[in-house]
Image 1 (spheres, helix red, strand yellow):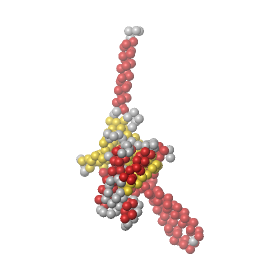
Image 2 (cartoon, one colour):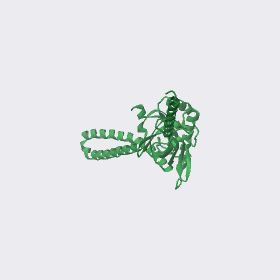
Image 3 (cartoon, helix red, strand yellow):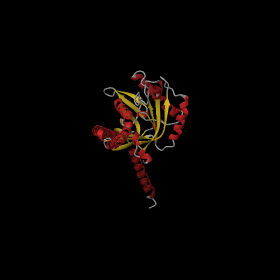
Length: 306
């Protein structure tokens, strides 16, 4: 029995080595998944695929490419901030021990990015508008009881508003099914940075506010920072889109370089141009309010438990 011990030990060691190699092989296997981004939380994003949800881990070495041309023969390297909810992507990487796909490359088509950006630019106020219209409808119903002589007119207005509310609710449901919108997030903090006419550099007065926002962000579990750049309607549409993009990019770079916010935790749908004007552009004061970058600290409601 003493002579067989070395052979038994060697056999056991070989078995353990084979099992370990098999497990490592599974964890490091290369995979390719494609689907639509349904949410971002910290350095991870959730991908909705035909076979269910997949968690993708973004790292500083993840390469993001915009495939261009008829046959996608050309590609443009993009930043991690381009990976917004609603974007259809193709991810290549390998599984880690937490069953997450660690992304080596993420590829998408520019048209899909534009679609996701356009919906983010327009969907956010829909739910608020529906709530406002519901309140107006309630007020009009009370008024009908007091003003019987306007009954027919008020009923027509009521029917029109009910149809609009129904349409808005349907739009919200359809968009939220595909896109991880702001309705899926809690807003923990918000800072607006204003710019001079034609200016893209950050005014020093706003830098302390960005520093304070960054300090608050790192205390929030699974935070992401959303950066949206805007322009006034003065000048051509192409120029305004370029200005809004450069303003947002400069704020992103400041947050990364001066506030130590990693790119994996930033979400930038790109240039918002002249969408969502907050003031009339026929006055200098209104134009100044529209030349802005809005920075928000977001937390996925799933993490917050709300």
